Length: 209
Image 1 (cartoon, rainbow, N blue to C red):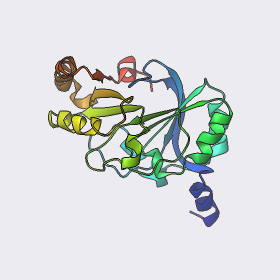
Image 2: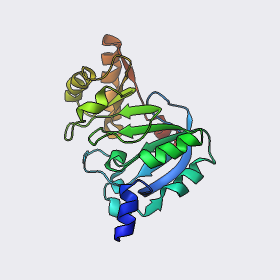
Image 3: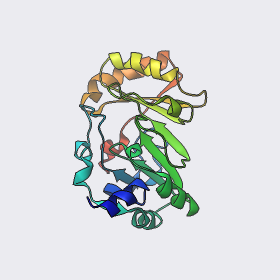
Image 4: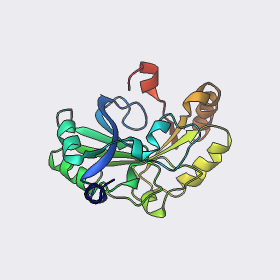
């Protein structure tokens, strides 16, 4: 990568874009809401069950002008979801500032493992055991979403829930490949612990991106 491109990436004026598309939010608090998704390449969290492992290597995804991403997003609805990969590996200030200047709400889905940049209307924190969130993000998270792959993840969920602010909405979501086994356990758990809500990957049931 040439020096000029690297400088633009450092400033957030270019980002390694994997894909962008308009769809229906499939999971979490805003399930069922139309949103423009911006998937940024690059992630070193390394979840073994990740369903977008092709996002991990940022070098596979072209450095794209943030102005172009903003222009595309402005054609669709009023909400953008920035996801990955792990989008906080990159500077989100430029992208979110200009999206909000276009009266677009900015949402992020993040593991919280990197310093928070950007201006956000909604922060979905989805912590991972192998690379825990930085302390700073717990206090500003609007939504805590824990992926349940096995029974040990319930303990992890409770540990993470003690760290977020009192207004943060708590979700348990079955990992897709194990959802038939874990969903009944999640239902029972939420009924016994009603501070939690269930999140499902409804976009996969609906067969949409």
